Image (cartoon, rainbow, N blue to C red):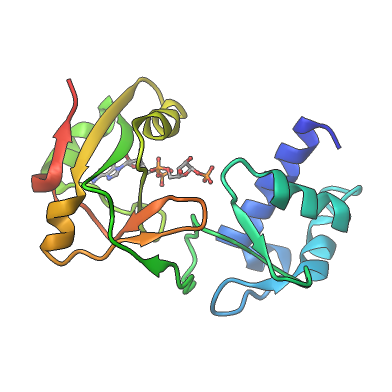
Length: 182
Ligand code: HQG
C-alpha cells in the first residue's frame, strides 16, 4: 500500500465512521464503534484491495490518530470529527491558558459577530500550538490565527475536552474570548 492508497482508504474510513455509516450499511453503536470486519466488507466494493492489515496500518500511521481500535482489533471508531450524534467520552480536562484556531479571511466577519461555532462537526476544534492551527487553516487558504483565552473560558465554566491526539474540543467560543493575531 503506497501513500496515496493509504490516504484514499483513510478518507473512506473517515467518511464512513464520521458522517455516513448508513451509506455503507453500517450501524455504529452509541460511542461510534463498529466491527472492524463489517467496516472492511462495507468499503470493499469501493476499494477491492482493502484488508485487515491495510486498515490497521491506516490506524497506526494516521498523523492525527484519526481512528482507534480496541485491544483485540475487533472494533474500530473515529476518534473525532463526527457529524453524527456519538458519545465519544473524551476526557474533560483543564486546558492550557491559550489555545489556537486557524481559519481564513472570508469567515472572519461571521466569527467576529458570533464567535467560533462547531459548524458541521460536534465541537469547535482547537490546538495547543500555532503551527497546527496554521496547517488546519491552510486547507482553505491563507491562514488567520485566532488566540483563545482558554483560561478565562474555563474559569467562566466552559467545558473543554481533549482527544487522544491532543485536539481540544469545546462547544463554542464566544467572540469575547478571541484575539486575532496581527
Ligand atoms: C469556520 C481536520 C463562519 C472555522 C483539521 C473553519 C482539524 C466559522 C470552518 C479538524 C464560524 C469549519 C477541524 C462562524 C467557525 N462563521 N465560519 N461562526 N466558526 N468557522 O473543518 O477547525 O483531517 O469543521 O474557522 O486538521 O477547520 O478531519 O473545522 O474554517 O483538526 O481529521 O468554519 O479537521 O482534521 O471547518 O478543522 P471544520 P476546522 P481531519
